[in-house]
Amino acid sequence: EVQILETGGGLVKPGGSLRLSCATSGFNFNDYFMNWVRQAPGKGLEWVAQIRNKNYNYATYYAESLEGRVTISRDDSKSSVYLQVSSLRAEDTAIYYCTRKWYFDYWGQGVMVTVSS
Amino acid sequence: DVVLTQTPPTLSATIGQSVSISCRSSQSLLHSNGNTYLHWLLQRPGQSPQLLIYLVSRLESGVPNRFSGSGSGTDFTLKISGVEAEDLGVYYCVQGTHAPPWTFGGGTKLELK
Image (cartoon, rainbow over all chains, first blue to last red; front, side):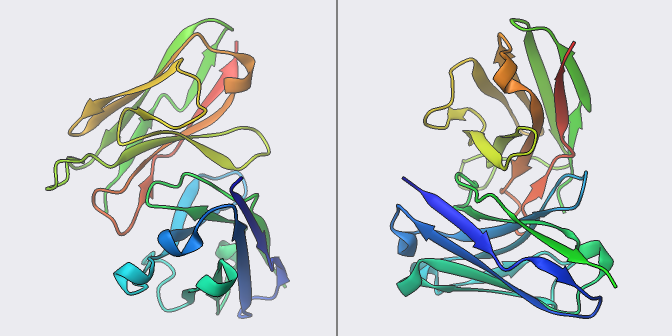
C-alpha cells in the first residue's frame, strides 16, 4: 500500500525558515518524480515544486512565486523528499501536500504551515 | 502560464443525477508527443485530493466508472453519471502539458441540492 506522510509544519514568524519532510513507503521511490503542492486556507491548489528521479539527474522545478526561497531535495535511501522554505511570508500560510508522479496519483494528508508574528 | 477555467464554480445536484464540469484551457493541451496532459482530482471535505482521471479520459484504478473524462485541445469535461453522496467535494482539473508550472483550475464545488 502506498503511504505518504508529511511532517515538519508549524507556526513560523515572518522571515523564518522551515523544512518539510515527506516519508513514503509501499512503492519503489527511486522510480518516481515527487512534488509539493500547497493550499492556502479556503483556496485552491497551487503546485510548488517537483524533483525528478535519478534517470532525469534529479532535475528540480519551482513555481515562479517561490523561486529563490524554496529548495526541494530527496534521499532515495530513505524514500523521502524534503522542502526547505525560507524568508517565509504570511501568504505562504497553507497546507503543504507531498504528491507522487507527474499526474499526482497519490497524496499525503498534508502538513499545516502558519506564518504569523 | 496556462490558465484553466472551470465552470460552474458551484454545482448543486440530487443523488442519482448526472452532472458535468467544464475545464477550459488558455492554450491547447495537446503535447508535441501526442499526449494531452489534463487530469481531474476530487477533494472531499477535510481530505487530501485524490486522482480520478488522468490523460483526459483514463480512469485511475479504484475509481468508480460513473466518472468519465472527455475533451481535446482546450475544452475538457468531467462527467458523473449518477451522483452519489460520496462524490461531494471540490473537483479540480490540472494540466501538465505546458509544465513547469503545473497549473490547476479554480475548482468546482459539488453540493447536494
